[in-house]
Image 1 (cartoon, rainbow, N blue to C red):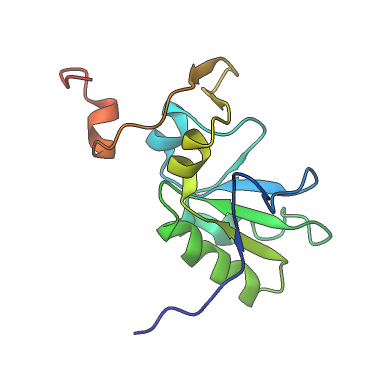
Image 2 (cartoon, rainbow, N blue to C red):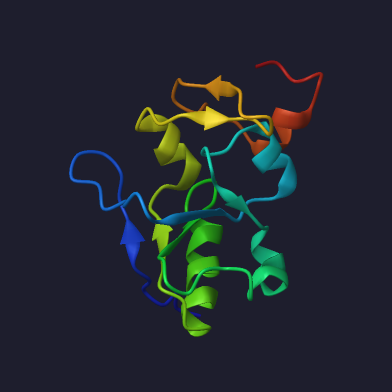
Length: 130
């Protein structure tokens, strides 16, 4: 199986992210609750069909996952349905490393430092050392 190329959005100098883009966080719920981009829409990648008719056809949808893998798959699916969609290269790891804000579900800033490279399951483990 060979992955099909999808449009990507890069962060940093010369970013291709636009103010009108809709950020669609396609990570699992526990990942989203830990921290996400402000104003990001949320729908896990495996549930995209449930919001298919709620997404705007007139704006670009930029899929965001942790590192870009699930975002790639979600972007491919949206493009098959006719959406103008792109994948955020590097996902939330790149978002945080670029110094962009990350908020929790009530909108409070949660992390401004680069994302630690620990497995996601440790984020929700109260006994995990952070």
